[in-house]
Every structure is written in C-alpha cells, then in structure tokens.
Image (cartoon, rainbow, N blue to C red):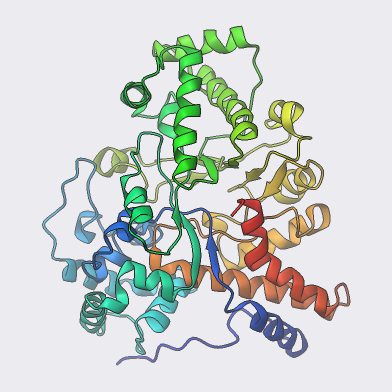
Length: 471
C-alpha cells in the first residue's frame, strides 16, 4: 500500500490561529527571496563540468552523511550503501540495490530534519507524490535517475531553478581551484566562490599534516619549515583564494582556544610542531595561536573568519580507518568561549573591520557565553544553529536564547553548510519558516510591530548573510 506524499502549506507554523496567520504573512514576504549560501561543501566540479548527476543514489545518498549515519546507526554497513572507502575503492554494489536499502529504512527518518529536507526534494524538485518506502523504491530510483539525464536537471540548471544568488564551496590551501577557474572562464553567470579552510596545514594532529605541510611549501615556494615562511605561505594562498572569489576563511578546530604568544615563543612552538614532537597540549596551543594569526591576516586581506569549534571529529576510529573523514562520526563536545577567545579579542575584538563568525555544537553556550560576547564585541557575530541543531527545534532555541543579549542583528541569518546540493532550497525554506513563526510570536505578544517583523524576516533570510560575508 502506498501513501500520498504531501507538503502542508502551514508546515512548521504555530498551531495557534492568530500567530499562524502572522507567520503566513511574514513568510509570503521571504519565500521567494534569492538563496545566499555563503558556507557549504558542494563539489565545484559539478558546476564546472555541468555533467548530469549519475543516478539517485550518487546524488542523494552517497554524499550525505546526515543520511547514511542514521542507516549505519541501525546496522546498515556503508559498503551496502556504496560509500567510498578511504583508499578510494568501493564495494561492488548496484546503486539501485543501495537505493532499495535506503528506501526500506526510510521510516528511520520520521520526524527528523532529514525527512523534511528529503521529502521537500522528492515533492518539489522531482514532482513525486507517493511516499518513499520499499514498495516505491524502484519508481523513485527510475524517476529521479531519468530526470537527472535531462537538461533541466544539470547542476547549473538546478542552481538557476533554485534561485541561488551565490554559493560558497570549501577548499584546502592545497587545492589548485581548477574547477573555480573553469567556472569563472566559462561565461556562465552563476556565482560559485571558494572559502579558505586550512585545517590540514594548521592542525599538528591532522593525519595529513606532515605531507600537507610539504605540499604547502611546494605550492607556495616558501620555506614552510620556518615560522616566517609558513606565515608568508598562508598569506600567499589566501591572496590566491581571494582572487578566485573567496570572501571567507573557515576553521574547524576542536576548541575555540586562541593565543597571542610573543614572536619568539611562537617560533619555538612552531619548531616543535615541525619536528613532530608536539604534545597534545602544544598542538592545542599551536592551533590557538594560528586562529589569532588568521585574524591578523583577515584584517589585512578582508576575509571574513568563521570558527567551527567543539567537535570530536572521526570519533569512530574503525570507521575512520576504513572510510576516512566525514562519515557521520563527528560528535559534539562541551565548548568554552569566554576564556578561550579572550587572547584574540584582547588584540582585535574592538576593531569593526574584522568579522569573526562563531558557530557552536554546544547549545548550553548560547545565552551564557555566545550571545553576550556577540552582543558586546563589534568583531563577533553568531552563526546559525549548526549540524545537530540545524533543525526546527534547534533554530527556535537559538532565537530564544540569543535574542535578549545579542538581538537579531548580531547574528548572520542562515547558511546551510551542506554537501547535499538538492537539499539547499529545503534547508533555507525551513529556516525562513521558523524565523517567521518566531517573529509571528513576537508580533502576537505585541513585542514587535508587524512591519518591523517583515524587515527582520527579510534581513535574516537575505540581507544579513550578504552583509556578514561581504557578498
């Protein structure tokens, strides 16, 4: 028995009729605004080659760790889904068979953000009207895969259909950015920019650090085994990224720790790191110093700085050994910001020329630390609820806990932070609906006039991310 797939017009709006009516009116003002996606992980090769996506599995299942981590948690092996292994090999799995496994387990996603995003894609992008389950798996696979071979479903056509004004990908300093160059030289009007993510060459505990450092030196022609040469190499690559469209950097550190060491101590610490002799405490101190150095460089080159701390990455050691990074085993950590950021803020916190956007996976810090910090320092802004909190409940809690100390205008609206290209409109739609519901409540309680709420809704959906990321 099949069941109808229906997206209700009032989804995520309040059940109270008065507030729901206000939310509807606010949503009408923002629903069709262009999408600004200033931080994400889509593959620039998609837009460079504009080649058709291969099939439903390769597009919607394989790249999306939100999806396969849930299946893995219920005993489905990544080999069974055709997920690439760390060495680049893959189990010989028919993509249709992998899709059938996904469909058979789709009930696991009931009530989750992933189900909202996926059903939005199925309904609005592909026009499917029956729910995905074991009985509709083949119809879904065939319908999606056939559609992907048509001109209307090429990456650039979808980019334009989704009304994306700009999208940022994320690359390491070792990336030649050849796909960005191809996009730029192609004559296509779609705006796809890069972002500078230096993790492999700033984290001594990164498994690629020694080889990445060697390559860093080869690319830049700098002696990256000296502190001054190492910093010059970063400035050189940042300048290159900026020429290729970058407006931001991104830093995925385990903590928010920053440091401001005297130059001689920084050099001594770097020498220890390069020798491979750094203790865990020294590795943490080095990452902390690098954040402050990156802030100094941002003052010079104007790149916005994003800090994504508080994640124990690749927690599943066996899975990491077999499949590598980004396989859904990154787990939130308790994160402290007040003391951790003070060295950087003592040096740069009062300079409005610098923009530092803070993210967190530790919701307990919203009202206690993050909102008060961003509500004071002109340098600091709050990124949206991220990853495990990128959900209606998490978005609502973010607004509730940051409004009093930070207001709306010390936040930067929404960014989707996704590898799943087709989910981008769905994710932005959820964020817009939640913000309109939240603003509707303030209007209903006479804390905000409706004309003010319209302005805030437009700012959150469109103007604030453009301003924060200097787009």
